[in-house]
Length: 244
Image (cartoon, rainbow, N blue to C red; front, side, top):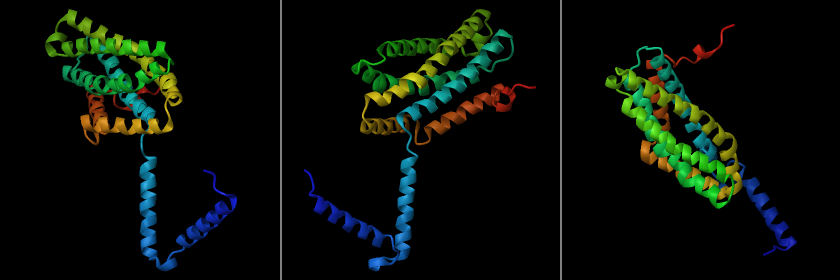
């Protein structure tokens, strides 16, 4: 229903005066301290709202965890090939994070929330198929890695070779996999859902994460990954800087 121009102008003037008066401490009997407190509360609420993580950002930061574990896998494979010591618990812990956090949670979010929407919109369906197939291939490789990440298996030359191959295949597949999602799939997701649905999905993702891993689940996963990196001597970021 259209509002007559005169009523629109009158309403606008009224709102303008009300807003001006409300902005003056003590106006209309308002307590200046209370007004300041309300302003702080509104500012805090606005800051909290700004800190909400979008679905794409949520998925991409989880890819950061994956990247760090790919580095752990690469170091483990290098040690196996060089016949150097490899603490089996460190590798088992890394594979456990891949299974619980990346495959059972992160990949499931993509499979349950993203992939079906792309298929319904008939957009990037070929890419989605490949990504889904790679999720399944990754789970099979994780089964191998978890089975062989033991002290007994590391004493067997045959098992060591199989373990190293499993690690290399996982790294080789997931490096381009996550890069394609970050640069193609996630940006295109905005085009097939409404802003309201996009925001609602962010809340769904956060709720699911808290259900599975607790309120500080992501932060605790990062701490666990850092502990593995320290055990393997690859935590110090400066060591990867090329020397002149």
